Image (cartoon, rainbow, N blue to C red):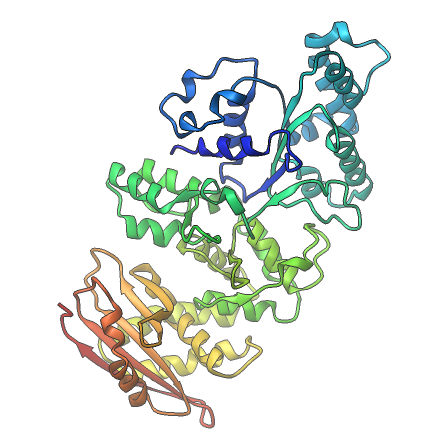
Length: 503
């Protein structure tokens, strides 16, 4: 995939007041690859014009202006943290980089100069040469030394002294999993503009693979595009409605098979730790998202710290940054983005602590089969059990509870269907629509929910508002499923009708 357009974006910020960029994304989302590309482009240590021949960046007005014009200081903080061992990581980093600086500019530096910032100031004063800083895994000290606040403070002070308001800095581009703005009260790096999984601004299309890019890949590798989307799509930003997990898409294309590729790079215990945190409302929100729903999240209270989590919003925001949740920044809502991540949540719940939900999920296969056979009484009984189990965790008992229970009850349908909550029809929204994936010979389901009314009223609403006509391009059978919940008796009623071939 041609992601060289990223260079045109970073060129806009070279030697401006916005020259400090921090790009945070989940692991294996292409952060390091992007840094290698930027290094090849900016570094005066190589002639890379031919490397970019035929790519998007070659057409940009700024292509030759910045091509191979800078000394590039590339810092992989993970490596420094590992190699420093008992030595202070900043001290080790400074020594290692100074050795290379002296190899190139030794005649300009006296023996007295041992600090990196002072050395770069002297070089700039004597030669006018500026540096571009590319910093990978910038936040590894924060993530892997969570208990050492003194080390974190020293590290942040080092980066501030090295980068902030320094004339020798033409551009600083940092990558990590977490944003930089709030580590406690210490805001040493407040000069950075943040691009995170809550908002990527003008870097959206470089965060993962776009829909157009995935369509092209599916054609090239003869893979089904709709199935690829159900497995790996779902990350959402302001302008890009569809961003796909790049690691998983690449592996699926290479292996010609859909599977859990991104989640296998880390054990599910990491997710389980956060799911099991005892914050009021957290379990309700997780259950609601498992049922296909979305939850409101206040992402602004999060201190960008994996240790000091103070409420459920902090946990959900962290899961957004880690890639376990998608986020709609316009509506400020979180959701589980795709089938790959749904399975990871299921794995995390299967090892204990979520028995009620696991019983619903295990029973969902039978409920789907009963629905497809038109077994109205069996479906109603299955929903009774699912709603009762879900209500033991949910903090509410209303239409949202019913909607959540139904979403969970049809959980297993996601193997063969694409589930859409609040499906737009032009005359309102169908509560739940299940569209069969390509090559799946099963009818679509249009589900309408009622609360203290009748299941037949739900069926009538589907017909009156012509919900089935909104299934543009679908020509198979459709099952209309009307469900009513009687709050007083705590029972469900179900009516199922078949609409034969839609075209």
